[in-house]
Length: 394
Image 1 (tube, rainbow, N blue to C red):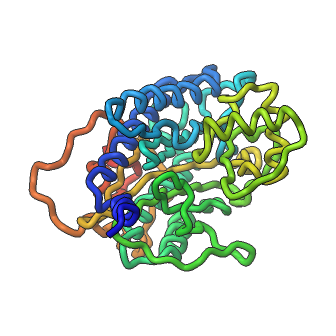
Image 2 (image 1 turned 90 degrees about the vertical axis):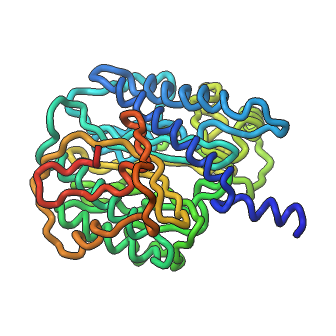
Image 3 (image 1 turned 60 degrees about the horizontal axis):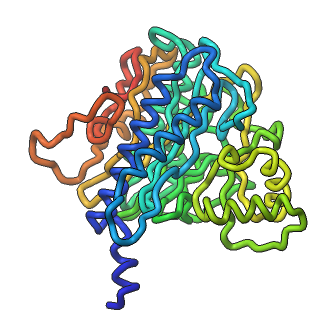
C-alpha cells in the first residue's frame, strides 16, 4: 500500500485520531453554543453575539495541536449565525448592523468548528423568554426536535436517504408544521462540509438528489428546519448575504481592483471553509464580493425568510456512524416545551423507539458532560410523545 493510499484510508472513522478530532471539534462548538445562548438577551446586538461565537471557536482551537511537527488547520467550520423569528437561516450581520433581540424572539443559532478539516456543526432554537414555551412556537420547535430524533435513528448503515426525507415530513405534519424546502443534510469528510451524499428534506418535481445508502464510518450533518408557514422561503435582499465559500473548481480573471484584492485575501485566509464577510474590510468587501459571486468564484449562503408572522425552528447536529452505532456529538438541551399537539402516529412512535447503538456498552461508561455539553446522554434520548413537555433529554 502506498503512502497516499494509507493516508486516504486513515482519514475516516476507522482512525481513532480522526474520531478524536471530530469529538474535540464537537466539544468546542457545543461550548460555543452554550456561551452564545447564555448572552442572548433583549436589546443585545445580534452581530456582537455572532462575533462572540466565532471568537470563542478561534481561541479554543488555537490552543489545540500547537506542538505538532506538521501544521494543522483549525478554526471556524461555519460562521456563527443567529436568525430570528421568520428568518430561516444564515443571518450573520456585518459590524455596522444595529439589529437587536427582543423579548419573545425565536432565535436559531447555527455554527461550526473544525480541527484538521474534521467538522462538527450544530444548530439550536431558543425562545427569548422565561418559563415554558407554549402554543405554535412550542409546536414548531417540538416538530424540529422530534424530526431530528427520528433522523438520528434512521441515518444508520443500510437505510437510505429517502427513508429520512419521508419520515421527517411525517413528523412535521403531526405538529401541523412543514419541513422547509431546499434544506439538505450532507455527508461531511475532511475539509468537505457539503459532501455528495445528501438527504433532501423535501423532494419535489424540480429538486432531486441521487439515491444513497448510509454506510458505517460516515459522518453526517443532519439539518432540520421546520415552519408554521408554507416552507417555501424567499431571498428578500441580496445585501443581507454575508457568508460565502470559495468555489475551488472555478476560475475567472476579475476586472475590478477591489474584487482582486478581496479574492486574494479570501484565497489566503479561507481557501476551503465557509467564512463571514465580517472577517474582511467591510468597504472593500461590499464592492468586491459582488463580482466574485457573479462569476461563481464564491458560493453564497443567502439569508432566507418565511412570511412575517410565520415561526421557524432549526435543529442541526453532527452524527458519527460508528461500528457500535450512531454517535450524536453536537446538541444542546431545549427549553421546556408545551406543544398544542400530541403525536400518536404508530410509525413515529416506532422510529423513536429504535436504539442508536448496535452493541451494548458496559455499564457506567457514560460521560457526565457539563451542562450544554451533551454527547452520549442525548444520543439515546427518546422524545416523549404522550406528555405535554417535549424537550431533549437533559
